[in-house]
Amino acid sequence: MLDWNKIRTILLDMDGTLLDLYYDNHFWREHVPMRFAEKNEISLDAAKQELAGRYYHRAGSLEWYCVDFWSSELGLDIAQLKEEVAHLIAIHPDVTEFLRAARGVGKRVVMVTNAHRKSLDLKMRKTGLETHFDALHTSHDLGLPKENPAFWIKLQEREPFDPDATLLVDDSLPVLRSAQAYGIEHLLAVRFPDTRLPEKDPEEFEAIHSFRDVMGGLA
Image: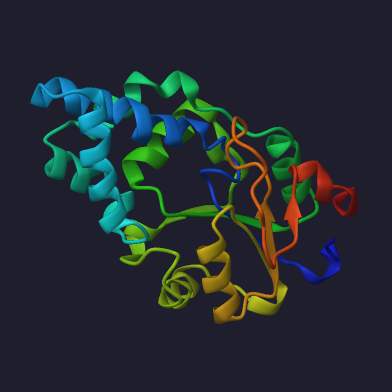
């Protein structure tokens, strides 16, 4: 699937790629609607319907990923609500072993996430994964979501990488297409971002069930 001799930099998404997306799906689809319903004294169904419309109009934008935006938009302390269900944060199988193996053979391992810095800090505190990375970059630091091809220009200013010698692993097909348009050569999707949902169709991209699928060449 990969020729590791041709790859020097590994860019890794966080939610759905390194971490089980179940936490985020549950948070936005169940926990936030429940708290929104309580605050506004409406039914849970009404809250879900109201929020679905608001989510739809922000999908793919920087605001969609912004804890501070949603706190203001919904009148809720989103960072605190994330803490309430933080026990659901879970690392995907084989992730830690892969990160150790990649750095062990001299690859530069970089997290590139759309997550807000507050979400990133919470998840690194809960998982301890930060120690396995050479750098962590968020779209909020750069001012653009990864779906925007200009994101990769800004990333390269902070994190010099050779697109021909770079691998991106991400569960988002729009992000993978954005990176492909920029010229990143090696791209992998994820078949099970949320382990409680059916397999995701990777469409035109090669995809992994877990990082075990690509560890062989790192030995």
